Structures are given as C-alpha cells and as structure tokens.
Image: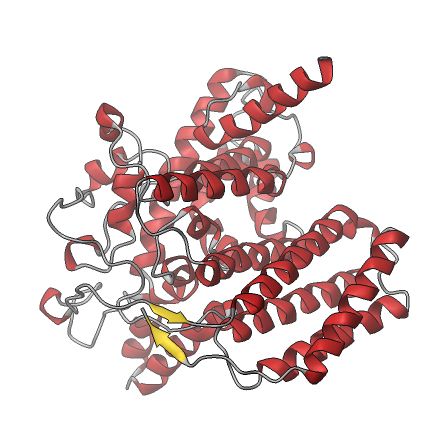
Length: 443
C-alpha cells in the first residue's frame, strides 16, 4: 500500500510541475550544481500528455496527431538535449561568473520571496528573449525550428534548436546581479515545462486565467502564420508582458489558424530542419551590398529589406491562408518499424544521459553523432527518400559494430545482447528489402 501511495504522490508531483503548482522550498537549492535536470526527468510525463491529448482529440472526433510529424518534433527535443551533453552547461557560465563576482545583494536561497522574484524575473527576461528570437534574423535562424511544424500539439513543445540556449543567455544576465544561479536554472526549466502543454488544440478557453497567464488559446496565435498572428504573444508563463508592451493579439474565432513557417519546408528530417535556415541567413548576408546592409541582414528582422523598418514593411508580408500539409504515405509496417527504432534511440539517449559524466567526451560525441545519424535516417524513411534504405542499412551495421567492439560498455550486458540481435535482424532486413512505397502526397 505504501509503494502505491508513494508512486501516486510522485506522479501527482511530476504532473504538477507542468503547471508551476509546486512547493517553492522543496524546489530551491543552495548551489547551482545541485539543481536536477527536471526537464529530462519529465520525459515520461511528456508521453502521458501526448496520450491524453490524442484521446481528447479522438473523443471529439477531430484529427489525431500524425506519427511522422510527432516523431520529428520529439527528435528535435532529443537533439537539443544531446547538445546539453556536449556543452555541459557552458552557456550558463557567464551568468554564474557575474553572480559570483559582481552580485549586488545576497538573497537567501531558502526564502520564498527569492523564489517568486526569480520566477518573475526569468519570465520577464524570457519575453525579451522570445521577442528577439523573432525580430533578430540570426536568432530566428535557430528559433524557426520551433515553428517548423504544420501541426499544433504538445509534441511541438519539444521542437527546439540545439543552439537555443546560446541564443538567449545574454538576455538573462541582468538577473545575475541579484538572483542566485540555482534559482535561475530551476525556473528556466519550470518555464519550459509550463509552455509544453500550451501547444495543443484540445484546450479551448481557460476563462479569467487568460488575462494573466499564457494559455493554449494565446499560444496558438503565436504559432500561426496568418498575418494577424505574426510577431504576437511572446509570453512564457505570463501574458501580461504582451499586454504591457503591445504585442498581444487575441485568437480570432472566425479565422482558421495556419501553423508552420510562412514559407514552409516540406521535411521530416530534424537535422536538416535544425540548420537549413542558417544557410539562408548567410545567403542574404552575401547578397547585400555594403557593410551596413550586410549587418542589417543578420541582425534585423527576417522580413527586413534595404530601406525598410527593422521588422520589414507590413505591405510586403505574405498573406497565408489554409494550405495542404506535407505528408508522405508509407506502408504501415514501416511506420511500426520507425516507431520501434525511435523508441530504441530514446532509450539509448537515456542511458547516455545517466552515464555521460563517467565517459570520455570523445565517446559522448560518438554516441551523440550516432543519435543524429539515427534521427536523420528515420526522417528520410518517413519522407520515402531514395537513399533511405542504404542509410538505414549503414546505420544498423554501424551500431552493431560499435556493440561488437565493446564501445557500449555503459550499457547492461543483457541490453547489449538484445540490441545486437535487434540491429543484426534490421540490417539483414534492409539488405534484402525492396523499397516499394507509395509516392509522396500532400494531405
């Protein structure tokens, strides 16, 4: 009975984190090194929210989530967290340095006032980070990853750039003069957890809460490519910043919101979606004449052109209406195969995350590279690309070889043996499988 009670309490506490319904003192830490990775520990709850959302949509008779797009979103989440294994918190070094050397006050780490000040400060700075990510071209090159899905569901909340943390850290530095690093790092995570469940069409309206808090209704507008949705509703937890600074827009009941980028990229390849827009920024910089225009092409808004305001001319912006979503029809067996292999990649990441501090950085990078190759290949198979079979065969052989040579000593022996058999069978299958898929279609 005690175990059941403990499990129930843990489940309730885990879900409460997504709504900031937590005890401040239980989630305060004296040192930033003691702050747990709450986001990674919340992955099981992400799956709970995804299942619940799908159930609600099904009961309402509305379209449920698409496997290809959802796995692409989850793949971006894995890519972002693989980056954390490589960077190892380096993006927070400047904040910690300023606090240690130049802080103006010593706020008690175990005081609720410190907790709420930190929550308010982090959310205020997030508003400006988010706004800059839309109004500064080089920052948008990373943030566009989050907007690249044509669907709007909770999985999109995990669709983030591997460099997103580096793009925004400078905006939080003023907090370092008085907010302890542990509180800063904790609230960054809770803010992201809160925003995760905002990405859904299953929740319509939350009444009076919508005056103060960000809600799915407000955030749907932010993700729209419609003209009235562009550059609106930047708030993280609170929507009051948008109301104060003139960037708030309510959802229009009579107009369907079209999700995705203004110029959508038809792809399920998460690695390509991570970097393709950076190449566009470089190209725009190269085509400009004069250093003033070149710098403006990088640091002004994505819609900026010579002679235009910072964020571009309103009359030049593209009017986006309802449009077909990119979709590719592949056999059911292939969808099942890709789902299973994606689950294996997630399990591999979890093992890597648990054990990476005891591994050499080179070995960590090798396994991160393998995860990237896996996610790319899964994306290519979802797209029914002609080279996908060869890539998948190579991936299966490569991992089976790594296992055979003992490069996965971090894994339990039973898991190594199971994976060896699994990837050997997969490699054998692709060596003889003829790719007879139906052609790509838009639906």
